Image (cartoon, rainbow, N blue to C red; front, side):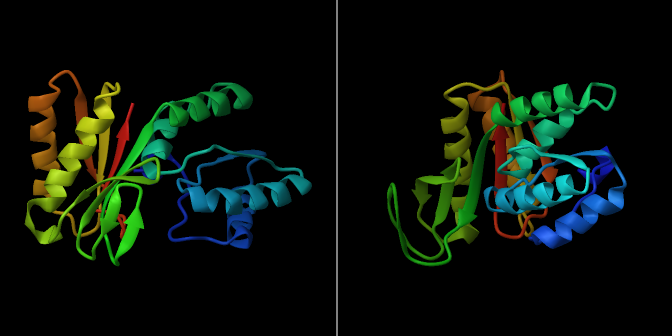
Length: 206
């Protein structure tokens, strides 16, 4: 999806040196970087600082998830002044709340109690807000996804974007879309195949 919009995509978790090399290869005087991860934001900032020493104007747009990156990219307009464009992208990202559904890999204490391996976790802005008892192969994934979307949409939102993770079947997205159309018919939902390895679902609410 990002490549289709003309973005240069780095897979995995690049180092600052790898990102700097990509920035230099673009040959562009001005570049906006979408880290799409809270962890990669610092890496991107270091690479941007080094690139600026060489005269390249690099701005890191604060996107902590691919769903925020998609929101930022959706408002990108090359015909705008670069500064104005970056502001618009940052505002779009900030206006997108991010959720995540994943399967617990180990026992851990969370803000809402202890989870066991195989439990399904629902996160909002990086914090666990619900635990659906496993196994994940059962109805747990869809149940957690429905609860999480209801919770996120309940505080406002008109558009829901869902990215299916690697191994997540299309029926998961279809089930979530059907639930949302019933519970919040005024909200638009779009489901894409994201292919992310660690999360069954990434959810953005705007």
